[in-house]
Length: 316
Image (cartoon, rainbow, N blue to C red; front, side, top):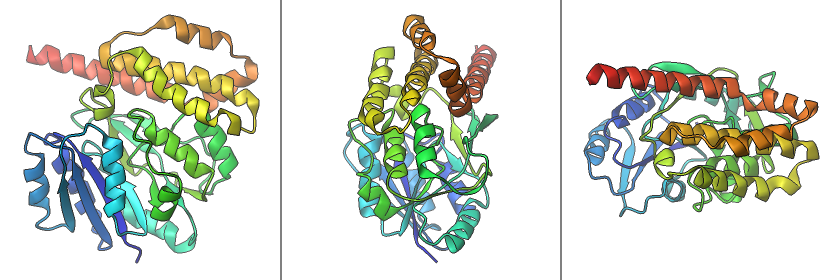
C-alpha cells in the first residue's frame, strides 16, 4: 500500500479544524501520515491538532508567523515521506470513502501522476452550496493537452481534490510562494505539462466558502486579485496550443476578480469586466461557458451571501 502524506496548513483554524481532521480519520486508511504545518496560530488550533495526534498518525510543526499558506504547504511536502501527497486546508473536508476510491485508481493506473475528482461548495456552517464540476465527459485517463487548455481558461480544481505523486509535485516546482490567490492554479497548469492525469467523476471533497479564508483575507482590492490572475496568464500564454484560448481566459480572469472582490468587500469594478466580455467572439464565448462553470461558481457565492445575510439578520 502506497503511503499517502496529507498536508494540513493551519492558521487560527479552531472553528473548522476538528471537522477537517475527523474527515481524515473517517477514511479508515492505514497508509497515511498527516502533517500539520501551523503558521503561528494564536487560538486553540494547536491544542485541537494535538488531541487528534492521540489516535491518528499526525505530526505537528509549529512555525513562526509568515502569513503564507503556499510556503507552509511546500514545507509540509518537504517533510512528507509518502509516495503521494494530498492537501486539506483547515476549513475543507473529505467525503467518506475518498481514499478507498482513489487507491482503486492507483491499483490499476500504476504510473499516474495526479488523480482528480469534483468537489462540493459548502457554507461556513457546512450547508451545501452546489457542485463544482470538472469539464471532462468521461472518467479515466485524461488528455493532458486538453486538461491544460481547459485549466488555462478557468481553474476548476479545488484544493482538497487532487492526489499528487510527490516526485511530480517537486518536479513542477511546488507552490509559487509569491502567489497567495492563484498558486494552486499555476501548480495544476505546471503538472498538466509534466505528468499523466486520471479523472474520477464522483465529488469526494468539500470546499468551504467563507470570508475568513486565508486567500480571501490576503487582499482588499480588485487590482490585487487581478495581478494574481495576470501573473499566471502571462506565464503560460505562450504555451497554449490554441491562441483563441487566451481571450476567454482573460475574460474568465476578470469574472474571477469580480467574484473575489464581491465576496471580499461587496464591490465590483464593472468596466474591466465589461471590456473583457466585449472582446469575446462566438467561439471564445462557447469556450468560456463550457470550461469556466461560472453558473456554478456564481450561484454558490450568491447562495453563500444570502445565507450569511440571513444569519446576521437572525443574530442582530
